[in-house]
Length: 396
Image (cartoon, rainbow, N blue to C red; front, side):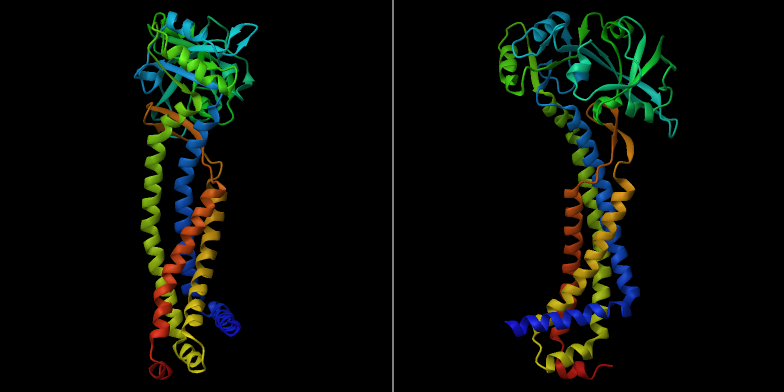
């Protein structure tokens, strides 16, 4: 066993030391695999960032109530009386000002993007005073909050960054009304940062919604109070509602886009991986051909087939690992934290988010690089030991 390990180490060391002699082909393999990894990480970091933005907003002790059968706020509808019953339900947290519940109106407006000037759908939300207490981490970073009863808005940091006309103190014309931007707020990178907020009582007449809302957001007394809250509403004959934790609701809202991006990312990575695989094959076949007599001599001296195969595989793995680390580093510095906005197909509105290159994503990319290296070195390694020793010794 020790002799076998010694053979593996000796032959592998010789192979690795001779890589600089084939630096052109080796560099091609490393760069090719680095490109695969960088694209793989870059595309999937979009899905990770979008998923993270939706998760940040969704706390386990917050819930959302929609009309029964609705799968989004846009398709829901609740009356003022229904909103009052929901706010008074058991399990809702309370402050000195009353229950921490916000009956809200959700509409879509068109605003030009700062980068392209093209119009995009932006969420415009009418909220009640408790809204900021219900969303964890929400705070005014510039200006002030809107005054009740006035045409004033506060803008999420992501929306202010992505869309024109949302600077502090600017006037914003929407339909027949003019609104003043009086504040910018952050929400810890969550989905709320993509929205514009105003007083629900002002937004209702502006959009002819009378006393109707589309959802009620509540802060629960605790995460464990959710079932009590849900059961009280779903068993109330005066209500026909759907109750979800905020986290679950936002996860459902992001499913379609995240799945699409992940499928596209994997497809692109597989296509590029095939190209990198052929590059690895070419490099290792070239390496084996250049050492044909050397390998035959080693076998004639008593080196086994196993050490020769492993030495070729280790060389291929070293090149692949180098490419994986290079591609992962490039992707991290190029994409992690990159600010962007995209449309959420389930709400047809823009969501601002930041690309997220997570440790797990980098690990998956390195594993992909290693797999390319293994497959790329396998067949050249098998060819190296199948060549007849006598014929190989005659090779020039």
